[in-house]
Length: 83
Image 1 (spheres, one colour):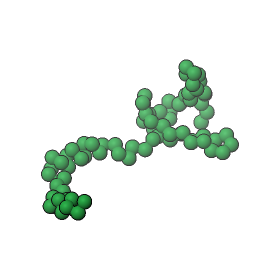
Image 2 (cartoon, helix red, strand yellow):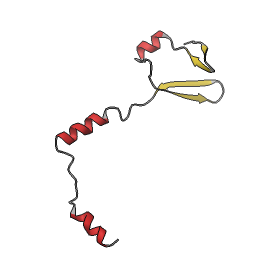
Image 3 (cartoon, one colour):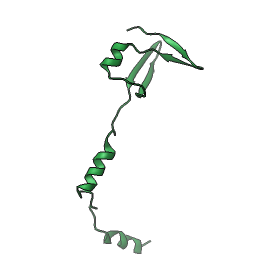
Image 4 (tube, one colour):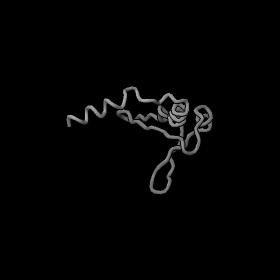
């Protein structure tokens, strides 16, 4: 697919064709990773969303009462004695 490099202020930008915007559900603010291949190649890919939604999942986890410590508190105080 062919596209055009354009001037944006003191930088350059790449126009993304509408079909790619639709297919990849891109929007203003989408994070893109760029990789350059030896020679004249370039790869654009959507930035990974590995941790997306973690904050709401952990909040629900706490509300469900499943965030209790695995070790009893007295173990912490025993180790403090030797310090």
